Amino acid sequence: MTEEQMTAPENGDEAKPMRKIRSFVLRAGRMTEGQQRAMDDAWPKYGLNLCDGRIDPAEVFGREAPLVLEIGFGMGDSMIEMAKDQPEKNYIGIEVHTPGVGRLLNNATELGLENIRVYREDAIEVLADCIPDGSLDTLQLFFPDPWHKKRHHKRRIVQPAFAQSIRKKLKVGGVFHMATDWENYAEHMMEVMNAAEGYQNVAGDSQYSPQPEWRPVTKFQKRGERLGHGVWDLMFERIS
Image (cartoon, rainbow, N blue to C red; front, side, top):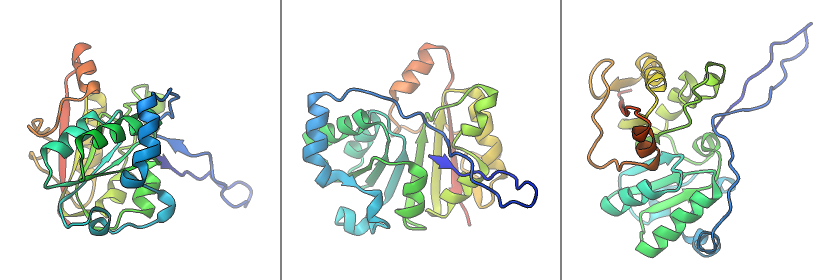
């Protein structure tokens, strides 16, 4: 997930691009044999590639169905659970951590799931190049890196420009669903989304939403709760 910034021009020079600011850290991790086998064997069925450009979701899944996209599914367990429990929906997951992608592919194969597809790419690039405007019923962002140090807040993915870029991808009536176990990030999300044009808070002005029954408790949520953190869900509907 990246944002481009430009340096200010000096002495009449043209603005020059700065290095990309990423909202994630690309973690190293060893693949298990099962994860690597799933990457090798299951990618042709479940994998989507940035280089292939704009997709037609009905063609990708072989059917018309409500479309859910999740940014940063981690090890994929909660996404697998949602896809299994809600077979009437199609799910696209985006994750850069290869072992997590391999684990999800392995589990999807074992369960014989047909309603899930995966990108192993930067979400900002996938959204810009691959996801059609007005195609998403739900966009999920669960427990993104909170970048809790103040000097790192610029790395948080939920920013005004991001809110507007994903609004184009949601259907009118579609929902941007966020969850975090960092209170300061929840407050930041609320501030950004309250000010975002074209959205309405599903729970009411400046209100957090109760955790829906269909959102599984994730590993990050369990860890946060063990540390004494609260959990905040925010759901904003595209209204224009």
